[in-house]
Image (cartoon, rainbow, N blue to C red; front, side, top):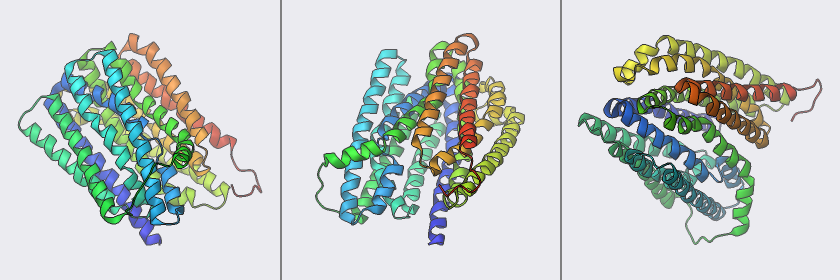
Length: 416
């Protein structure tokens, strides 16, 4: 059993690592093909889509997977997956409609409209068909899902590479490549489940749907606020600065998104054995502290390395047209250390199953970023957005550290 769990985890980590690597290559081709202005339009559209996509995650894996494991029969699992699929589909349609409403109100340029409409296809497909991934997790068999995800990613990378080789500079063409990835992945997941999963009639069950919706509400709200905190800076910055300046900032944050993804990958690999498997609370609490120090130190070392190599990194990935990104990257890379510490400290809330802590933290972080960005961006532009990024992540770490200290184990305390 341990070998199966370890193999399943390795497949998950391999997928994330390859996604980061291919993602960097894809972004580099996008930036060189579209230039600062076109890249700015693409990234702005993607930020809008990512925030809207969070609405689709109505009942996440943390709600669906345990119920699938406890389901008495394949038929019961089939019914459960159907309810989750419908809830996520309604959420996806709502998210896509909200995205269109935002675009209609803000009236961006045509490139942003077209890119968002194509990129938004993922809102309608990724989370609804992602219930099949949850079904695989419940059966400790992530290998097919990983292969499907990598196959769809390879197709997207090939399409982007072909457009880049043909010197295509149209934003819409690259957005279509991203949409194809979502369509291929949804088709592969659906076909696999129809071949291997339970079959039979399904019907809408309001009581089960309400139970799933209620159980996942806090996680859902937390995820919406988290995505808002991560992307709202670009929504505020875009109308306040030139396209070239926004493109430089978006390029900076794209590098940091891939860098900070390392923290999530490492935490996902470490936590099951060193936190969640601990029977005594004081052992788990101490492990969270050690992981926070270790990942924080790793984040600091990585931030220093990125800051030192910023000119080389920017030139290699984006070219000389993005020289303004260098200074922003140097400062933001150092600040990103806070993300590594925050991801580690959040493990305590997950271990204790306290979604209220996570929701409260992200609400405070989002409020901090909004206030800072609305004050600083009009005066300092991209540097003001970096300031909001620093303040927001600083608040996240302070909240996590305060909770870790507040709930430190008392001598002789029973296991949590």
